[in-house]
Image (cartoon, rainbow, N blue to C red; front, side):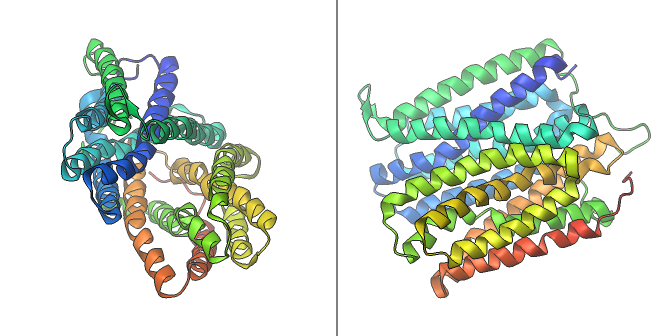
Length: 400
């Protein structure tokens, strides 16, 4: 059993919650832009809120094992959804940005918890030969929520609905939906007595609630964490700085939407395609090829002046940028024999990647302001090449 959910239905609920939380996660910056106008605040306030939320989610991810041991699979999913639900629902009645920002930080704490729980559960219940495909499909499914849920939030927030500003209506709607979903999951969990859904600790091993960073002494764990950090440096801010690259080349701002769509489509395709290629070529080959292709595409995006070339590069960048995510999640555990260590390893990797993503917007923003946005993209290409190093150094030996 999976904490009140039969194994066959667990995949359905995992994907359903994934669609919901990723959609709400991407809705936060959209809604913040309207709140800033409503409350008379500044853009820098939105940046502070998102950075603090990222930090909170990164730290909360370290408690994945505690929640999964305490609440089980369904119970932990319910807690994650409840955080989002409370954050959004209470924002319906917000009167200032400080209150709204605090609530959104609370909501986004669930993001770090969710992906660690999900990746550990999938790794435990999937045969190694198909893990890459399963991880690829799972990460792509999140985009199904990101596009319509965040898009509706942006559309509805621009209007007055039921006598209230659109952003308040969106918070009310998403918050109420979250409360209903969380309530149902809590009932499923309670019926099973909050059964343990996470990998059981092996007999004789220490029962810890939080991951031990002593795991970094193990070669595979240290190298996979290093690959995650370098991958984040090279790819996680490509989309953020793409509009500035286009502005620097003198393109009309109206084309930004087309580039955003091209990149998003590429991300969706890349997650599914790279995950499937793992079965045919192996994780290491797919990751190394993706990072080298990414480095070349980043250089092409900097050097190209023709619109068609840059659009093509954007689609391909989306494929290789996000296509490495499921590949890395497979690499993280493919040589790990002890299933009770999955949550710890995913938590540590997520922590380091999250910490990197707190630094990189500031780093590349500073470089772009001081030098040029092209310099930022060239540096991303260097990090992309560097990311293959830890993977090359990995040995095909089981980690106990």
